[in-house]
Image (cartoon, rainbow, N blue to C red; front, side):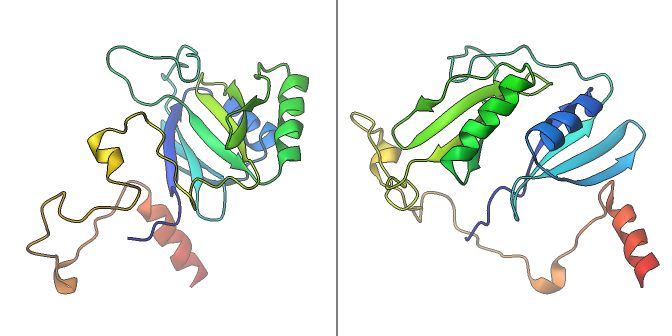
Amino acid sequence: MKYNGVNHIALATGKIEETIRFWRDLIGMRLISAIGGPGNMQYFFEISETCALAFFEWPAVEPVPEKEHGRVVVGPFAFDHLAFGLEREDELWELKDKLNAAGIWVSEVIDHGFIHSIFTFDPNGIPIEFAWNVEGIDIRKNPVIMEPPPNEAAAEGPEPREGKWPAVEVPTMKTDRRTYPGQISGFFRKAKESKG
């Protein structure tokens, strides 16, 4: 398998105006799609050429209570925070200044050894991090397993291991492959037909 990034992260908001203003105008992610229908719109923001952030507009959704990034939770839980990479160290400081100027809480710049980060929250209470990779330390090229001692799975190393899951015995033949229309597929079919 070769992945090209996270296609999109899907979240929900009852505050779409504030959400667009935050992610597009303050954070600087292009709004690349607004599709759907009343009560079920979906908005996509471009993170990179292959990655996007999406918000369902569900009017009755309320912001989650803000939870400190990395604080241990007991009980049902979904995720801790979203972290977005920045190309240059200067961008980290520029973004921190923009958040401060907007009156939005933002942490100091934190040195994690391999990245420098700032932490904040979006208008929906979603905890977010912006990180710049420290030059000369790339855990993607040179993985680091520092858990003392590593658990059994981590001790096996960074590469995917064959034989840990059942093998596919009956692959889907190309002649049997079917796709089914999703909620918004009609919009794209109509747009394609009007062009052609």
